Image (cartoon, rainbow, N blue to C red; front, side):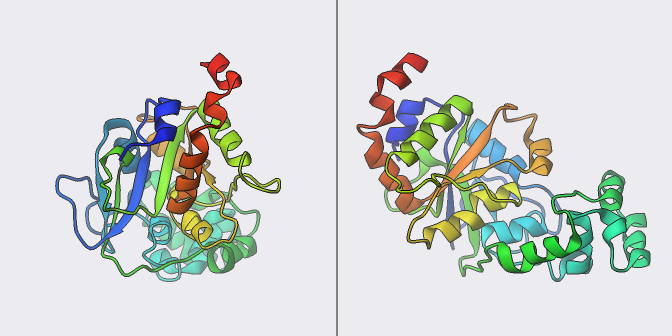
Length: 269
């Protein structure tokens, strides 16, 4: 599938499409069953090298990605449940409701996780705020299709309809996309930049925007944990801007005679 926006941006990294399907693609990257991994490492391979990645209910990578990809939330059941994640996302053992049980989990954790579990990721100031985010604020979906597929937008067929289109951009390219969005949106919120995991910023939050009467693109890869995993594949100045399919089509139409034909963009190039 050809993209007017991609033709103007001339990105070094492939724009990526996220699709739901009951058909598993051949020759793809996929996490091993039961293995916790950051799926953004596979996203990076899709964007940087044109690979295809696939996930299902047994190979979604980590609890955050289950929610991010629309397989439902496993926060209440994984790793000791919500109490564990409340502490992990805030201030670690110092936020734990049951410090003894939390310490036992730390003692049994892989070496690379010990310090993060002990200190906490500090994405939320309090465990109560982390709880609200998991149970009330994070948009949760449980779609019926077996698979979620990530592949370059250029490899999407005319018969396919992606759920999310993800541009992987540097600051100049992001500036152009925000300007493009602002050129057609009313109001001042041209994009949204939510708290969450990088996979949720290309998935769950985009699914939510697709249902909004005034959808907005979602700024992502602001998740420091994910950035650590992709830093060997994606440039350090990279961010994602993701949008529902219908919003992408609006932007494609606006790009025909929008910011990319402005002298400002031509001067920057």
